[in-house]
Amino acid sequence: MQRYFIEIAYNGTAYHGWQIQKNAVSVQELINNALSTLCRQNIETLGCGRTDTGVHARQLFAHLDIPEEIDVLNPQFLQRLNSLLPHDIVIKRFIKVKPDAHARFDATLRSYEYHIHFFKDPFLTNLSWHLRDKPNVELMNQAAAILLEYHDFSCFSKSNTQTITNNCSIERAEWLQTEKGIVFHVSADRFLRNMVRAIVGTLLRVGKEEMTVEEIRKVVDSKNRSNAGESVPACGLYLTEVVYSYLK
Image 1 (spheres, rainbow, N blue to C red):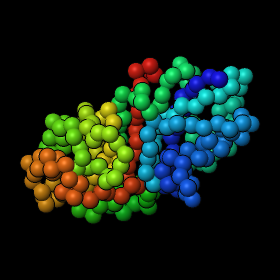
Image 2 (image 1 turned 60 degrees about the vertical axis):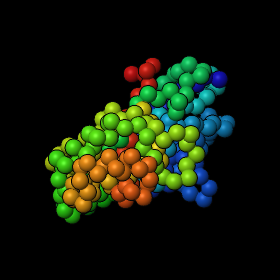
Image 3 (image 1 turned 180 degrees about the vertical axis):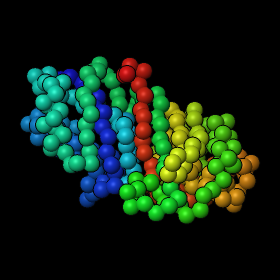
Image 4 (image 1 turned 135 degrees about the vertical axis):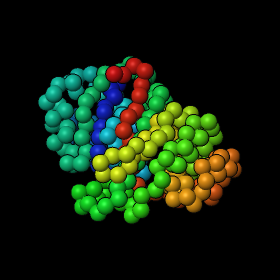
């Protein structure tokens, strides 16, 4: 058997997230089915993480083991594989890796974006969150910068998760203006479940001046999810990059 990474992108609108689950269609399930059909044997993938229902991915990696006699690096194999997948899921490439390479545990950095627009646009439906009133971006960036001083983000974590620790190292957290609205960029070594959407919801409270910049410290120090803002809708969230030391 040979281990490969696959690089995947998808529009998550129609799916109940990445991970296989009962009584719901997931991206992982459809990819496993397509691979198994083409390879004529059961193939299972393991992703670098999970995305929730309606969340998109511009780059997500998964690893899998395939018999060596199957030439997955042949461009025709990739073309046939993508023909078995829906229009909103694409496998961009196969990457040959060492036998113990792990898509989840070997990732050193993950990046997300959250997109917000302020005008009605049917072409942004399910791809960005429509917010009526523009918040104060300068205040939100001041509050976002405070997050880089912390490591325990229990206040932004979904309750009753099975994580051993809620510690993360955030390397970037900032809002940028775009032609159509604003985008929140955040990068860290790992993320907790629902963490980015909870951070965005909390920063928006600062931007709406419902909370001061310094009150962000009280929220994080409390380690209490109920003190943070509401989670924003999934439609604006994108997993944009996953970094490995041995991949280009």
